[in-house]
Length: 144
Image 1 (cartoon, one colour):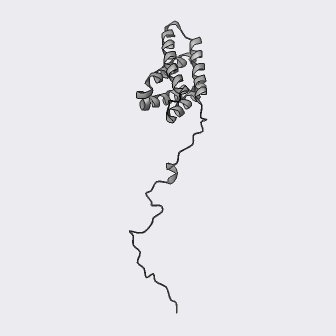
Image 2: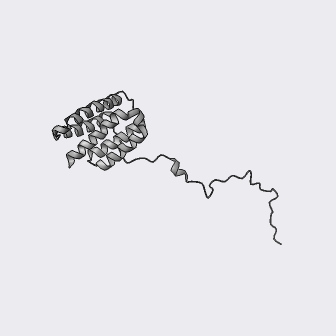
Image 3: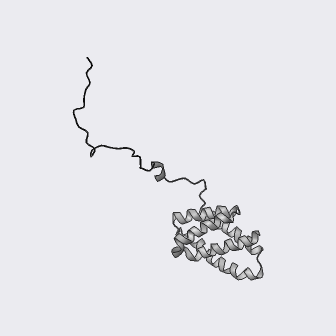
């Protein structure tokens, strides 16, 4: 004779704990994805921008002189903000990636990152962002 034990306590769905439901997103999407980019510090960012500006100055035409002067003034605002650590981590990280691409002469990615910064942070950082835009345009002319 075989006896089986029947559960005497009824199960209640209201107190059941479900660890993973079929429609729950995987937990890994909630963790920050680490970039393969190195984090540039403020002085490195300034150096890369200054190098690009010098290249533009060396190859500038007479018609670009006023644009270069205005770009320098706008970039001075950026240098002051970098020195006094007034930029958010988000802006600093994207600016660092922009500079990495600028150093690699990958202007498409630099322009993409700049566009992202313009749409998200223009109200706070608009003056120097316009300087970066002009620098990218001048640099693009120089590389052609």
